[in-house]
Image 1 (cartoon, rainbow, N blue to C red):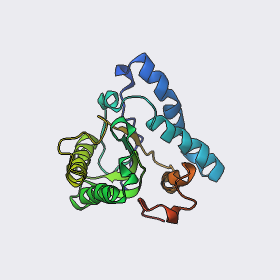
Image 2 (tube, one colour):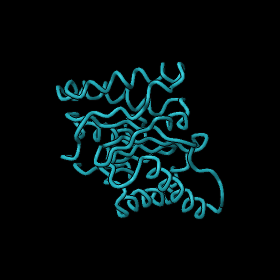
Image 3 (cartoon, rainbow, N blue to C red):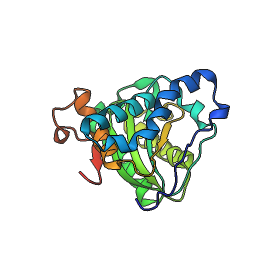
Image 4 (cartoon, rainbow, N blue to C red):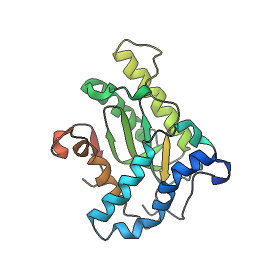
Length: 207
């Protein structure tokens, strides 16, 4: 992670509506807590639970495109949700097709996947950005995964993903492994599995 060079705020606060800003404040306050989280798993849990809850809240993803900043070699936690939160990825075959498109983004040199978990109706994806923008990376993943999934379920043209996505830049000094651990533990917290090995749709560089 030597490419991480400076703190980044990817959202321009001056252009956000008061309502959206009020919903983002808990997330923004969390950006300064990287050092705290190294004190123990409990502190990490409190910190990253707030981050991920904010990223999967009812704030519409397309509003966050305003002012987004993409820094090559920076780490980002990305979240996107299925259309109407449909549980598309309860189907093992469809989940593996979507995960294949995550791998394809790595192979194309757009990013390096550090960790991910594909839940029945949303994706958490921890990446190091390469030679592209966040918007282009997510556009490619969502369009290609939708094409493959829709072909497999004989639903051409169906909307698989909600418009937009949420992102959070990883700050210098943050414990990125703690973020990865929290991400891949999502299925256990949701009651989908007893242990990580019981849930098939995740991976992490360090685990």
